[in-house]
Image (cartoon, rainbow over all chains, first blue to last red; front, side, top):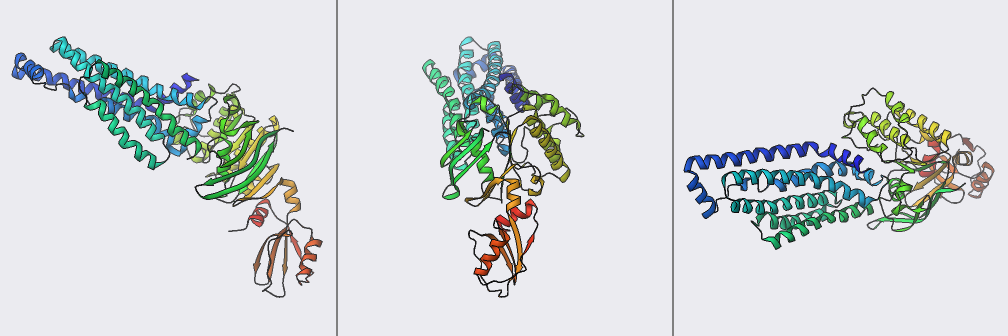
Length: 219
Length: 295
């Protein structure tokens, strides 16, 4: 059954996923070219100076990619379910409803996770090619919180899309934006904050149960 | 015969608006049951409650003995559900959607599905979103038949379908229901299509049940009489004898479960001594309009 569900969800989100992957690769290419250009134009020593002493944000072009990917995937996956209340079809399948919902979001979660790991590996490799490991560590720590932000954006967007009542959506949207800002604006969190980000971020995945309950109860 | 569906004292409100109150009915195994009513009388609401997509304000709804709001996966597998408008996953193709559903239903039979698809001028790779409403209805029906459910719930199967597709839909349903002794719960706006299809009917009006009986009994006992009245000012009221009436100047049409002799006696009690009370034969649609009214 899970394989069939993967198949259905993949049919919905494959173009959004490949589109976001392509966009990420294009932006990473831009980051790479930007570093190469900086090294070329001001010299490696000066460019290092900018980066290390003046905190030149050479990789912030990828800052909003995870959030954008989360929102786009949630939209591609859940808006067809809400169009003409197709979620009824899914909820009528002979399986436990909450299990089906968690399986659905787990598919988006793993796809996003794969994309974010790819972005992190590439940005780490690019950084490692030009900079010392301290800079690489800084870059990866920062992109970690952005990636968690991307997952949170996915979970919260899914909850907002599934919520059947607009007034409740309007409450969820500012809450979600505020919560997301925590992940996006925080740069280079220390270990404890990373753990907090990870747990609170994953915790938002259960939020989907509330709008699904509203949908099912017809309230 | 066991009850597949039991609805007991069902009451539902949307906000402060009462949809129905103390609604009771049951559907026996192997019967074709029609829920008929005008727009806004609560047909889709009833179906949503039955399928667990709406929690009623009060009352109980049982499907195969289980509370409809908490149906087990095993019970859901026994229920085929057609959503109003033949809604399906329109991003899938004919082949993809069959592959998807087949994984969920243990009794899946793809033959009836592909047999129906072969009648449509479509390819297996054609997406549902690129099909006509009639074609999509056949896809939805084919998926239901392939699921081989014990109970089929069809919410307004006729919506958007021309006469040919409606006939095709019902032909398949009749064959399926009779051959395999399945139970069907159906609603439709096209009443005349159901005339030779239903076993039992429940006709509802705003907030109340008007008729609950086998369709043949309804057609046999519900009658339309026409007569003229000498005094056009005479007033009629709906009561035990007169279920509904229409009056145009001195011409009166009454709808009743009473026999002609009882109606004439009642008219005599109103000082309407008219021997020209004529019974007018009715189709199911005439009878439906007769009992629910035109407005």
